[in-house]
Length: 248
Ligand SMILES: [Fe+2]
Image 1 (cartoon, rainbow, N blue to C red):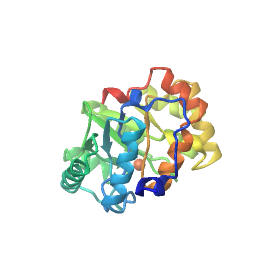
Image 2 (tube, protein in one colour; image 1 turned 30 degrees about the vertical axis):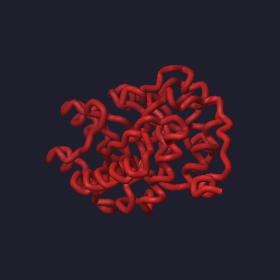
Image 3 (cartoon, rainbow, N blue to C red; image 1 turned 180 degrees about the vertical axis):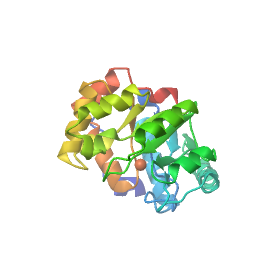
Image 4 (tube, helix red, strand yellow; image 1 turned 90 degrees about the vertical axis):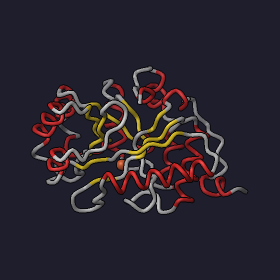
């Protein structure tokens, strides 16, 4: 049994979804040692090889950038990216690797914006996340300021912000302010919570999802990711042709 089948089981991908149509994944934690994602280059390479086997052509990996934990700077991320790109090349995995950040909108975010320290991808796209515990009180002003600076805001895993699960209008309001939504594929596996899965499916039905992302951290995430590939809502979303991942 190879190293990779040891990690992920003997997985014949039983799915109706074609991930080569999606093409690009832009939410993952594959730079070893800079956040709570991959812990070693071996782990990163195993995950990247699996992404390639599943049909992905490009991975834009996004280490956490926060003011209290994971104080990653553009320099740290870019250095990690160069090392990772070299390893992927030496391992002969034919997939493109880029990097940006997953920025938590916390008390230090505005300074990063003012100091132009935000790493973007695509065409000025910026991946942001919110606290899971309480909504930020400055979300509307942050969206406004980012729009003024012409960032294309992508909100990571909106389905996971349970404080708005009974307030669907809040999600509609954020979308109306020009924010695009990136759903985590593994939300459909029930990995987080049943209510998260329900909200992800509701957002797909409401045609609110613009992008999908793996939010890949480690081997256990990959198992949940592959489990999600048989989800009917995911199949519907990918076949809708509305996902914009391939443009990045
Ligand atoms: Fe993430």
